[in-house]
Image (cartoon, rainbow, N blue to C red):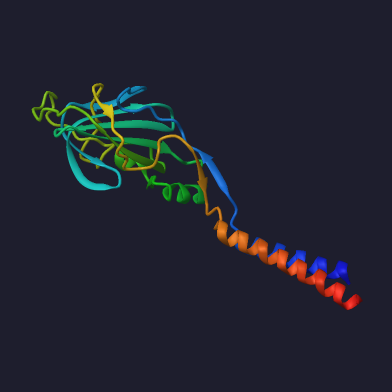
Length: 215
């Protein structure tokens, strides 16, 4: 009888845990350099123009440069005329699963379903914004073709110019640039402990009940 009660208690605990506790996923994000020390090959660069930022409906005027870091990653540095800057990290995520994309979005990334609208490959991208301070830029155009736009912004602009004098500021618009992010719900710790405690109580109750029947 004791063995039977023990088996039933353990089985019930396992069922409860498997039904309510979600699995844990993780993904390693790429490393992106800061705009204070830009790296990579320049894809496009404009000394001025009107630019957009993913996830932000505001349009900005200033310098715009996009750096290619790898086949899947780019960094965009926007220095506006008022001296504020926005760094956007672009990551092509064709290889990520749907759940991984959704859960990275919960960590602050912005999903761009088709990068071609921003001058990138026709593939899904995740974008991540962070702010930095840089010197105010001139609004006069030194671009022979006039003010540029950048395909990496909002379809009206085509890149951001270099801002080597910029210094990274603590204000962050998106998630951190490099980390191993926990994906999916990791389960509520209070709930997990409650279920475990319930299992222990059931197990103890089965043992006590068995002893009483033997007496």
